[in-house]
Length: 388
Image (cartoon, rainbow, N blue to C red; front, side, top):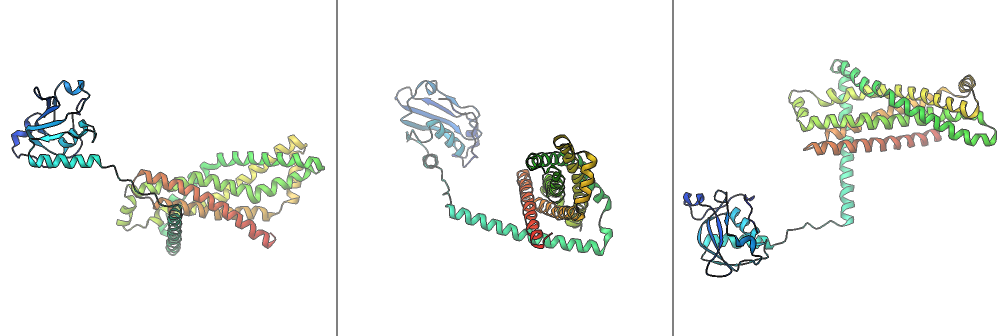
């Protein structure tokens, strides 16, 4: 069987110390007189195994050698010992070592013992232990998140005392990226959602002769629930992930540490502009989603229920209250705070490498969407208790 040309393992001690020995090529040839005896010669070292000379019987004979004669062996190190052991079959063949130097024989025996020992496998923790570790990790992350909110509140207080620290140009840029650039996807999604709500409602209201109530259905559903919720979910996947990836990359490239070294607070310089920008942009996006969603309901009401645009708009103005719009816009402001806080928190928790950036970005999106839905459910319970 062919021998590998280059060893992988690092070199160890040489035996003997003669530097000329390292220049001799390593060789492995069968004995001409004794069957099963192989002569190991030359320097089996990192420098001496540039070309390993092996007899033709090495590839032709399938039987492993019985004896390895080391009388011609000049030097061997750990790289050569492991190469020789791999050629013998990783422990399947254990030939006798004859006429080997004492240190060389000890090294070869140590390599044999390592090859015969199976790799250690760490025991898998029990299910209860895994659950406990996950619970502890979640509790520590929640504690860190609360601490981050406190630091962010202090940064906001510092900007309130000194408004000049806030870069308005950065805020306007973040409004453009997180708000204006999201208008197409928000408008299209809300329009289709209004179409779906009107279509499903029209199909049921027609059975009771109450088709005109599709106006209330579309209005309250879009203004109070769907427009702020769908807008927040889209922004969480779009802008929340961008916040986490941007800050995570800056952590990996040590830009955050550079800002701290220069005496610049990363929260004031990077997080607060995003917080202010999305708090302004998401309520405006919600109003835009209200308009496109109601328009989608109008289109479907006209095609399915023969309710014209003018009739739909007139009834919409009569039955809808301003509180429905204010509730949706208020929700959007809270959702914006959640998205920015979670995205920036996860981004700043990035450690190590680019793989951590992707992991933290995924967590930012998942946690932001989850918390947005939880907050929306809590709003619904609170409004129901207050009779709003």
